[in-house]
Image 1 (cartoon, rainbow, N blue to C red):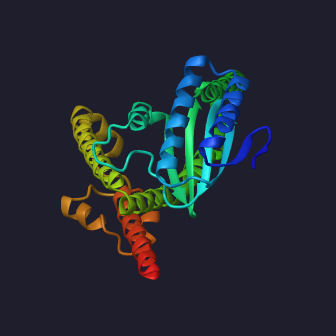
Image 2 (cartoon, rainbow, N blue to C red):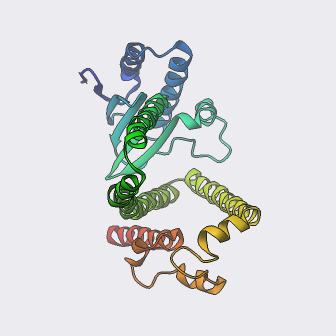
Length: 299
């Protein structure tokens, strides 16, 4: 049994219903003026994912397929309840055609799992036009405001305006970003760590993916640290003039102080600092505590 609307369809996962799902998806792609090449790639990824879903034992599982359009980006979302779904084959070195397709188009989809529900997102079309458009509007508005102020307002009045209105607004915005940034980063890390733990427990491919992610992350961190040393060496004079030779918020910390501060003294301490390492460590500890306590409860 299926139910259609303008944006979604509910159907049971089965070979018999695949054509119905494909027709629905293809119809929505045509309606959004997706060219033939992108449409074929999207349907190919959709078919490979659906084939692997059936192979993982999700046959006869109720699916909800949605087509969403937001800020010029078009996505196909597949939602279904059950065990965590791993897109790739379960056998190491699997050379199945579906796995080859998903590997080739790995940047077009992602799989997430939370609250006992799998969420697969297939990116049909990415658009940066909306962001560019909003950026141009902001720049154009700033120019329109600047021209009359610069032409008709005295220098003292401009300084007063900047001191009493502009700088407080900038500080308010930056404080809001810092206030929200730490919790958002923490919960994002917590979700990703728990997803990695769940997948690695249920599938060997998940464990290989975990190792691969760890290696690439370490390489990225090493490159970032190396780049920071190069930038600091090249711009040492300018940085010393801007910061007066001190660290943000105080004196330059020693190496031992940096190691000591990486493990916070309280669970809320990372939310009050701009240092990322304590936040990562707390997220790792909380994620491990959640996962192990869940396993203990089940057992």
